[in-house]
Structures are given as structure tokens and as C-alpha cells.
Length: 111
Image (cartoon, rainbow, N blue to C red; front, side, top):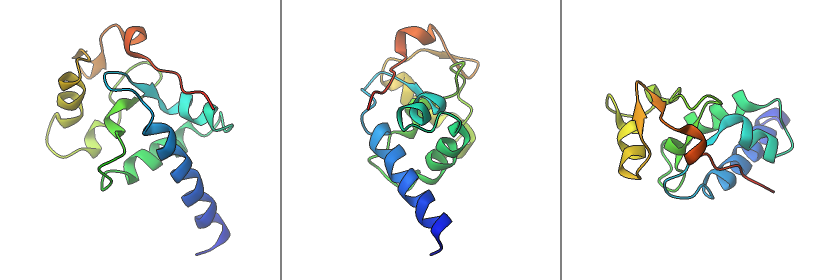
């Protein structure tokens, strides 16, 4: 493993630590997680971490959306609408791949 891969693994683990704290029935954004980790320009990297987390049962990747509340990561979940179904099972309202009343469900992580 080279230094870049090691840094990515460490960053991904830090992303997962934050994601595990997202409360049931709430969502956060890729950018909010990046900012919480002191890497505000790394929202895309957070997305890569979420994409890599689908084999981990304890990382609620379905609770991470884009800054507008869109379910941009939904194609990384099995089935047609699994991300939406998981959110709706927690009481989060979704229509046309976007969270309705996004501000109501938004959780901002803090260090």
C-alpha cells in the first residue's frame, strides 16, 4: 500500500465515523461531512467513501445526499429505489429523487 492509498483509507474511515453518527430519520451532505473533517473541498472524496461503504452494514450511506437533497448516490444501491426506500422507512419524504422539505431532515455534523 502506498502513501496515497493509506491516506485515502484513513480519510474513508474518518468519513465512516461521521456517517455512523447521522441520526435515524436525518440526512447530511457530502460537503457537510467534508467540512466537518476539515477538508471542505473534498465532498467528491466523501462520495467515493460512501460508494465504497456498501459492503459495511454499519455505515448508513443512504443518509448522505448532495447539497440540494438529491439522492445522487442511489445508483450505487441494489435495486431500483433502495436508497429512497431506506430513507422513507425512517420517515424521510422523497419525491423524484429529492428529499421534500430538505432543511427539516438536514443534520450538520460537528467535530
